[in-house]
Length: 325
Image (tube, rainbow, N blue to C red; front, top):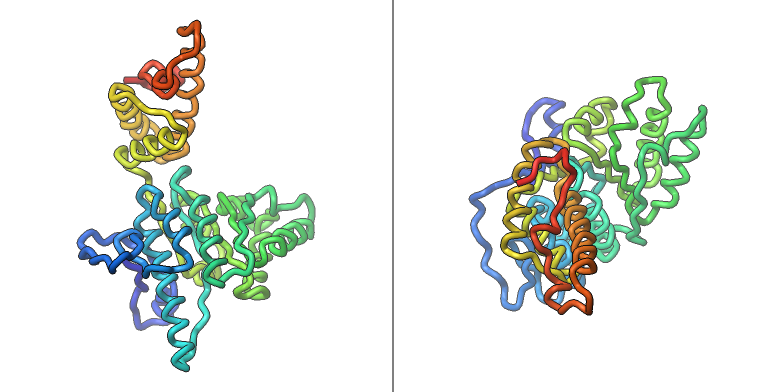
């Protein structure tokens, strides 16, 4: 994985070079671990790093290799910045406003929370809290109301992260819509409160790319843009296994097969609208409810520990409109 800027000699190319693109590189050589190093993605952190707990939490998330690579680069940049300061060199400040692009359930909000925590520990943010909002929280009902609501939320986010989900909806109403007023207020706040908060805009891939084109000044203000890819079926199964294990349940091999076959067909059926890990979580939680009903109906006395933990194929049920296998 690497983060690289796009070279060019023209003015437009120079501007584009400020934007970071997170790309996947398959043939990156493996890194040998340092003695007692902490594994993180395909790299290792120095033993004794004060950020170990946050890195471990992020590292436990399935997939997200490009996100882990980005977080490591920020960590490395801060560490080297500290060494530069100790050597009497200039330690430059950087802009960390971000755009997260991807379908629902791909980990955007979870990653934003972890980044807030990590940035607080690294000293980038003073508080490290996350304020999660959407269009309705920002856009008012009359002229001036939107700017007031948006400014209030920005003040609450100072020292932390302001995370706007489905941010593209702010530009859907055209020039006369109050969403434009929210965008203008956000842009001004990014200048007025430099390095006092991080703004993360999130939403579907295509919609976010269109949104960034609605205001010429937007792309350059978000130097970090991260793509959150859909999970593969294998990754979704790993997520399901983690979920049931954390809740002290277990899937029978037949249950795993039924779930895998359903996920294959559901990903094909929904295509761009599939909600990934969120869909898996809802499916597992529904199976737990059906399992509880089945146990009460089938057992007169107290069930065994094994029965309480086991999710059987018949506990996996979906709406009749959804093809089942």
